[in-house]
Length: 184
Image (tube, rainbow, N blue to C red):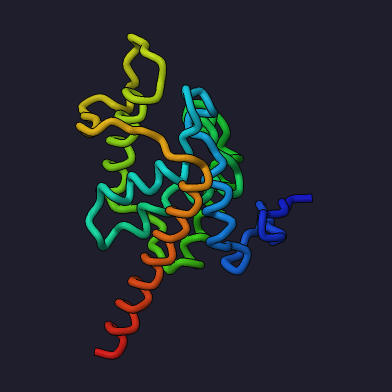
């Protein structure tokens, strides 16, 4: 068996995902329940909230991609970076899911540099605000400054609601823009 059952009752094949299997409601639900840093934070801080914060840091044209940059985690979980890098099979499964998500939402598979940078800025901010103090430097954060404002995590239900509302609004805007471009 290579599939999971999602919150909406969708059978999602991890090995052969299709765009039709990707549901916005499932992404919002799951990401709001997944805690960043494998749960090693003093309070619940969701991948959904992280994704919304990343989207706020990029130009409007890239906000949909930024909001969905971790959407694969709705299907495979939020694996800590050091472990993910040791598992090439996991990376291939995640890549296939990402391609299905990109096709579902009409996104380019290669994320713009501004999203990667915003993700790193959020990581630096999250480390400062949500992780225990530790003297060891994180190599990936060299030269990255955290945001001035401190993170105060929201509740899981609020994160789910806000993520889903942001996703619907961005999808409506993106769709309208593409329709208008096609009519021109």
